[in-house]
Length: 120
Image 1 (spheres, rainbow, N blue to C red):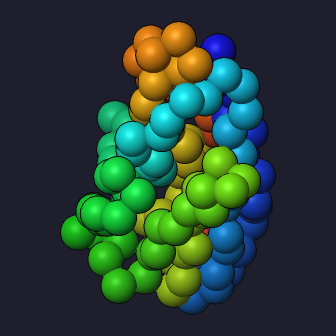
Image 2 (cartoon, rainbow, N blue to C red):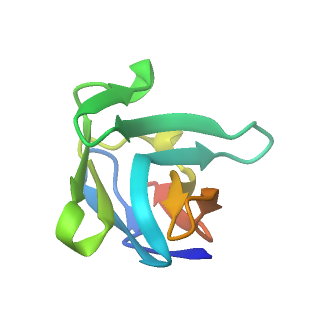
């Protein structure tokens, strides 16, 4: 079992910044993808950013140039630096990890979600 603990959400004014963190623990053998998703009220969950195989990054068009995803392999942690935040970035943000556990079984784990509110 792989557990994820998120932190870093909160209330910020438009134009401000926040950094989200997601730490993974458990029976991890490998991590193939680390990503951040978000879900706003009344909307479907959408991909925000993802790191694939530790090197390839992909971003939603709406956050390109403002958000940066990164990872710390030693800590099994993924970060999302969010700059120039806009009210439309308001959502619950979820981290997601996919990989293999110690018994080479695939896992697809989600964090509990952290609220990000951008408002003046």
